[in-house]
Length: 199
Image (cartoon, rainbow, N blue to C red; front, side, top):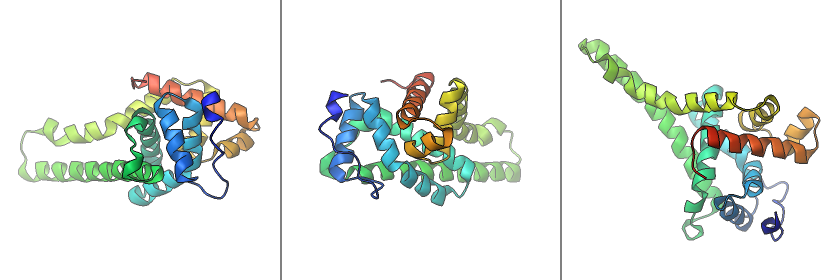
């Protein structure tokens, strides 16, 4: 888009890019610029997934949480305030919070189930309700993924769950980079729509 023309590409060798570049891309993303958001993802996905994996130590859950993080970044990019810190720090804070929330939800569910069995009270719904709530987002993501076309699902799966950059996805799928980026971007937008996230 024309709005992208004044931004220099994210430098290779610096996964987060410069603070100014990433902040500018977030501002464009907040206005609905999917290409800018694709560049935010490309520049930060490996770091985000790595952080989540270190916290959760579970590859499957880490993939789901990473997906949820980027959906949150897409819909809340307008909340980023450059005066309060770097764009990368803001994004990584979201990632860390999401990962910790998942750990706490799992631990809380385990404690509640243990308490129920110890006390033998007839509160089965209460003992499992938080576990169901914690699994809801992941279930919605999986359902939304099923709504994608096969080519979109393949590209989005490699990008979000595999942690590959757009260039790597293009190479793995033997596609032009532009085509791979389009499939990932369109898949992400369709996921957003399927999950009922407002533009």
